[in-house]
Image (cartoon, rainbow, N blue to C red):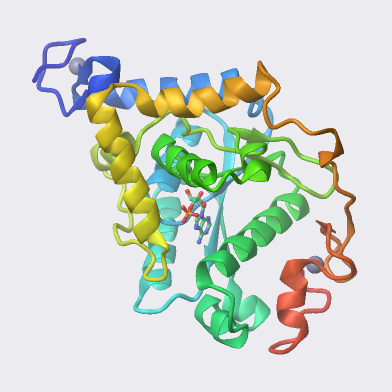
Length: 310
Ligand code: AMP
Ligand code: ZN
Ligand code: ZN
């Protein structure tokens, strides 16, 4: 397998692009794809400040690396979720090691247990009946938004890649979760109190972000979170890869088809979609719930008093 550009030994063959590249050319190709996505979906401009949500995994570390390489002002945010068996400690260590090796890459760490009183496993036990993964998603969204707004960032960037997005899309389609289908996008515009959210890796596949991290020598955490609802997502990813094997480009077709159906054909649009938001009485973040937002309600019943901390 030879590099299409220089004839050297290729490190990756991307069937859907009919393109094999050597390490050097692959490291040039990836940022070009990301820069195109940023421009095409108008994610952010060259002077805006970006907060990259860094989990310690391959996607978000690759994303941070690419944005810094493209010359963006990109700082990192890592949330230590207090997941045991060394998972959270290792994740934080990877994010910190990455930042330490790059002067100018500022990383902020929010430790859930230390700052709010409990990590995800403890919270899930306290709030029996709530799955750790849905709690975790809500907690991460809240902390990311809080950090972006208080830090004056223009956008939060996450490492979601095409495989993540199509797996979620398959799930949302199977369930006909219309409100999610109406919102799943590379950019969610900001509103007062809610930071813009962007996914600059949406056009890259998981194996491409993994290859990028490997070739760049980025040390990332390989393990899935022990709580992960990973089984279902992995199953959907597997099915989509089988479809892709049969018919090249299926993933792009499925994902870009959603964007097109919505933007060009008005699918999933509803006039009464705008729900009323008001500031949470405790943290001030916009919420649809009467009184406290979902995050503040989590803590209202116990653990440390978080008044004024969020
Ligand atoms: P996940 O929800 O685990 O699939 O992660 C999706 C994206 O959310 C990652 O690519 C990161 O950008 C972000 N993320 C996940 N976990 C964390 C974390 N503990 N701290 C900061 N960002 C995170
Ligand atoms: Zn080459
Ligand atoms: Zn709140």
